[in-house]
Length: 119
Image (cartoon, rainbow, N blue to C red; front, side, top):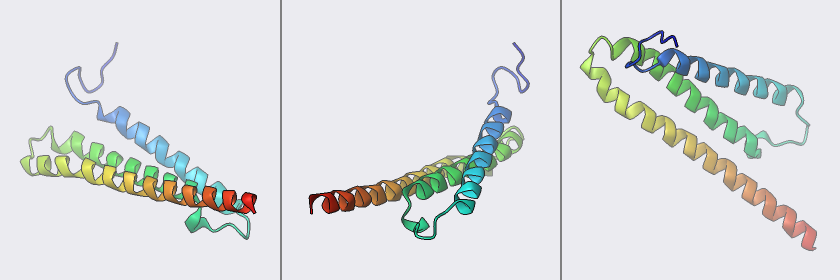
């Protein structure tokens, strides 16, 4: 087995590749959404838009975090360790907030469809 960054070091290269692939996939989704959108679709109230926005911000934050981690942590920059504790928490907060918005819009959409069916 080959370990590029060593056995006891955090493998940031794989994490950067993973987050960059996820970012590309989300951007392709947005490209297809914009090109194939209907005139009557309200994109601000579209739940998949908010869910993929959360995934995009999460992937970008962690991609830049791991790029900086591979440089700053191994150089023993102690100011970076403070940021290393805050950046993942903020990224998770943004992800969970946008996922909550997506679930709220989906719940409202499902309730409006059920209200129409009962009439």
